Length: 281
Image (cartoon, rainbow, N blue to C red; front, side, top):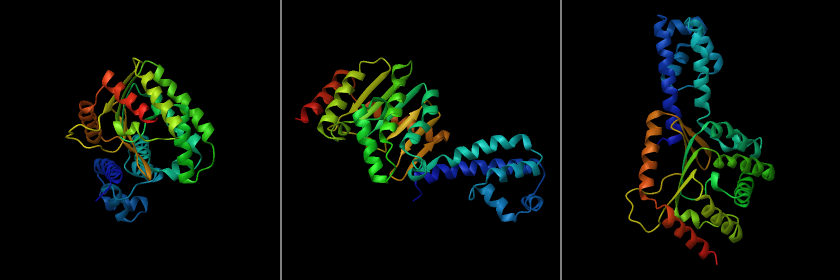
């Protein structure tokens, strides 16, 4: 079975290939004629149009030049870069260090007005404490064998989280089980859960918790993070997935809405958090 990551990227490559075909046809060229003009084998042009091979930026510019469509080139290059960024393995993203990985997300956060986060296992970024962040990033560093820039990465993440105190909206859904995973140990978790209670008072934050003991028509799915209506990010074991296809965005939005219906808010959510704190002993 094809993974959601490869499926999403493949669909985007097919859409790019269809656009290349439209440009070629508008120029009155067959694939064979275009390939001959560029000194390629015909199969290369066919693979680009079918989406089975990703064109380089040089290929895209050459294609547009041969079709007399130089004005299309930069849009196509931008699209191709976006596809390349859809599925990025962690070892590539984190090779420069955890600090860089944290900084790379800042532009997306800054241009987003509404955040919708669903997390089945962890307390998500916007409402994490410094100690919880450090415990998470230390675990990532050790598991993936990364260089030790955890303290610098924590500083970047904490600076980024100040966005919670700006005129934006954060709608966060947690599975109740996320309250019981003792990331960093008892003391760190107690501080984290206490912080959740305090951020619930912010007008910018809506926190819902899906109780463990309900009869549920929708099982937990992968954790995902929605940025306005244009981007979804999913953290997989091996890689970081960015979803931008319209119908897939709609699926995540619908799933979030259904999960939201299962969650409790306000005093009922605070009661679940308090119970989790008390369980720490």
